[in-house]
Image 1 (cartoon, rainbow, N blue to C red):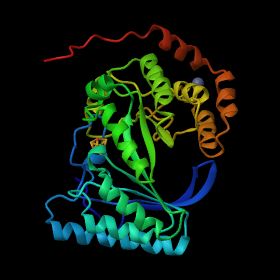
Image 2: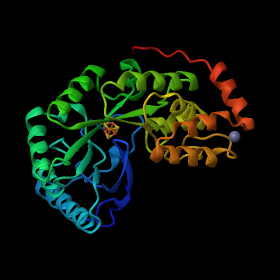
Image 3: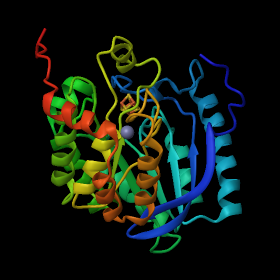
Image 4: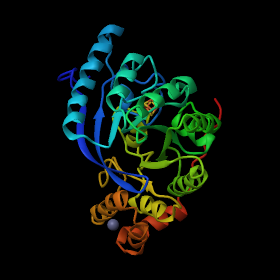
Length: 329
Ligand code: SF4
Ligand SMILES: [Zn+2]
């Protein structure tokens, strides 16, 4: 494990823009080192290794508070409309983010939109309603968006390919809880977890997007990237996994009936979603533009373009067959 440079500083802190409710908002994003994800099992996830290890609770609280103080300075300086805080796990998990830290942060962002990630089991109606009351003390514009890693609406794919430990029914229940308390739901989908063909992964996203549109307020699709020290990396090194083609990503975005944000991390690289190397940057630029302007015609025009690798993608979409794997041990 790499030495931590300064444990009192966020792992990353930056300012930018985000599209929410058809408007572009200024934002500040912080990645905070925490106690780490309690689930700690997903086959594709490297973030679960980002954690303080071997520190007692009071020290964990102190280190996290120091990072939030640094974020607070940035908020006071930039006055953003949206604050995003990612902890490489679940913000509402008390073992990961002590409750006094949760409350302190919400106090700092009253009247703003706060976006945090959480697994469903940590969203509790009573506590979440209290946090909603607190953030609204700064005005009606104050709200909490809970980002949930649903990944797919298919329970077998989520269980067998990702090992997420979540059922679609729990996601529906948690979304309902968040809405009842007046908050918003952002849903993460994962495009092409391991063990799926290009076509299966593509169609899984088309179906998942369609099925969650009536439930979620925001949708973010993450094309899968091969992160280090993951089961996925082992498969990739054995040539048993290829990240999705950018043609697949563009095709999904061109067909969806809602604006789906998408930031292809590692785009154009062998570990990330990629095509042939010639057309990658053009498609990645179009996806970035679409992220902010929601102009779906842009994605449709990408699909009209030609590159030699498009024939290859079409061949793979039609000819790649799933390898049978046992469902049980
Ligand atoms: S994807 Fe989320 S729930 Fe899964 S191990 Fe990583 S941080 Fe934990
Ligand atoms: Zn190409």
